[in-house]
Image: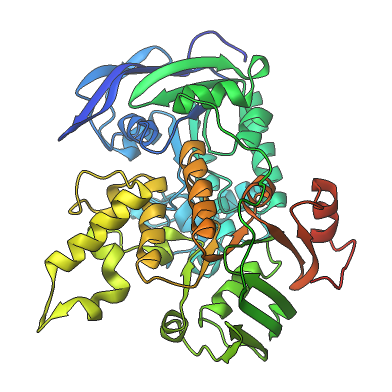
Amino acid sequence: MTDTTPALRLENIVKTFPGVRALDGVSFAVLPGEVHALLGENGAGKSTLMKVLGGVHQPDSGTIYIEEEPVVMTNPLEAKSKGVVFIHQELSLAEELSVAENVYLGELPRKRFGRVDWKRLHADTAAILDRLNCGFGPGAIVGELSIAKRQMVEIARALTVDAKAVIFDEPTASLTDAEKEVLFDIIRDLREQGVGIVYISHRMEEIFRISDRISVLRDGSHRGTLITAETGEDEVTRLMIGRSLDLSRNVARTAPGEVAFEVRGLSCEGLFEDVSFELRAGEVLGFYGLVGAGRTEIAETLFGLRTPRSGEIHLKGRAVTLHSPVDAIRHGISLVPESRKEQGLVLGMNCRDNITLPQVDDLTAGPFVSDGAEIAIFDQYRDRLDIKTPSWRQQVGNLSGGNQQKIVIGKWLAMRPDVLIVDEPTRGIDVGSKAEIHNLIRELAAHGYAVIVISSEMPEVLHVADRIVAMYHGRIMRTFTSDEVTEDSLVQAISGLGQDSAA
């Protein structure tokens, strides 16, 4: 930290929406050259506070200061012009435009008579992309890039202005490990230049690695600011949720039952090869591996979204063929997908309609859907999963990430599956909601469900799984029981350093 005058300060910010006080007198400041983490459960007020800062929402009361000058933010472009730049978790790119056009969107360099200076635009963008080691050029079409590369385009936008403060909102959610290191290098560069960094993330290891201070919000209020080097994860968690969490290794609660699901020699061209495993009723089977290991592709194949080249799928000892998700659902297989917002929910629809969507045909009375039947199903899973929403009429897009994930899980539990596949169950949700999802997965197993959990987080699979399948480049390298697995052996297996026929 290079200066005691804040680069950015919010003083006593209050924001109320109908029926809820989202921010209750929150004060927050980031110093030049500081990485200041902002933590809190989903719904704690982080997003609302940042939207007030970016001019999306106007505060009911309170003041925003840039280098101790009071300012009023009326929209994101004005915030950027004052040196406050946002890098959002939800990408805000124009997919049909080039990288260069996206990086300088709204501020394209001009020649005489207002014509775009394409040469300067591409040169300026190329310089930024080189700094980020992006591996693609200014002329690339954004819609043709991977999600991770689109995230790098979003980051490149922040480097086009003389930023006073840069807000990173879950910036690593879609990045590979190598791309994360590039991002952390960029953050260090910005810090050395005296830029204040606000870093919002649910990943504690990142917070403790790169931040100088940590501020915690809970229920719309500021609960405290800690010096990172002088605190620990347990203290931060207690501030966030008001209690400590049990993150110990899972111990199987019940003995698994009969084999419910068996896969034999399943292969899909260029994605995975010779995948075989068994899954018993009442068991949680974890799939763990690096990005590109083939875990999600296996899940999609088991749900009928991909056609395998070879192999067999058996349900309760009987071979089945899955040509589509309709076939999978009919055979009792459900999939909670990796991206809840893009694949699992209709964000503009209400909670009730999202939960009952797969079974609308079964809830019709004549030409109409039975409102009473839909509401009864919603009420059942709202209570069972402790979904926090004012009513079934609430749009799913307005819920916190943890409650959105519960809606997706509830939707598929309502289909009463024998096999539930959950891909990245806690991506982008806070530690409190994460613990609730973990407990839910264990409870489902205790009630006889056969559950597959795919995760990129080692602590997660260690915590919830009875057995862990380690994958590397589309192949199963080893299958561990919860008794024998260690972090070292799991890392070796997913790095391709050992293969075990136990798979």
